[in-house]
Amino acid sequence: MKKEKPLTENDILKYEIAEELGLLDKVKETGWKSLTAKESGRIGGIMTKRKKSKANEQDNG
Image (tube, rainbow, N blue to C red; front, side):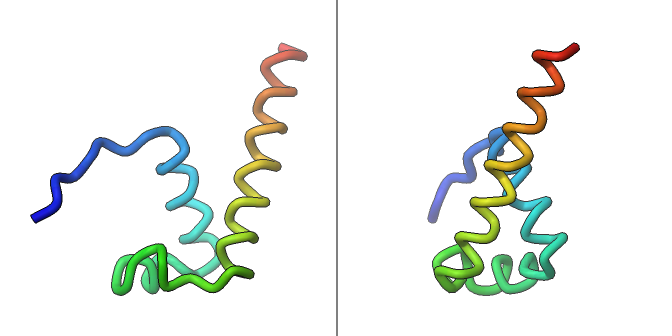
């Protein structure tokens, strides 16, 4: 039995993006490993874009 780790900020963002892309049900049923490379890459790309945007907002205050 796996212990559930507390979600990090990155995990929360990843789940939010998966939901927006309509992939959350797939992830919940079969796990992150079931995503195609294209789907995973899309989530990662959007995460990177949002992190950069957030960092720029903080820098520009």
